[in-house]
Length: 126
View (cartoon, rainbow, N blue to C red):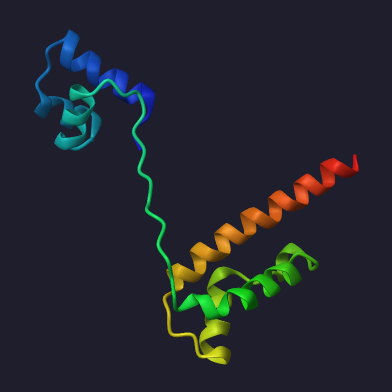
């Protein structure tokens, strides 16, 4: 992701100092396509958003993962299962044939939800 300062620097080099794109690439380490994209648009921030993918193989195991993650909330941080460990357990004990990435993505989303739920519960108690 290109920061606002980098975009400003690229535009200053190209538009004010009339430095060629090839030289800007050398100075910044950005690709030519990125430099061109910066110069052609008025945006000040560029982001990449990944499309939501559905994982039908994981669908049968989502409840199990949710149960494990809620159990892990009760134990100390050191003893919680990582996404890699959850995937290994699913493969060995439950016959899961999907990829690690789909498990890790789902675990990341669930942990965000669980931590948000805990924070909102804690603030409501205060």
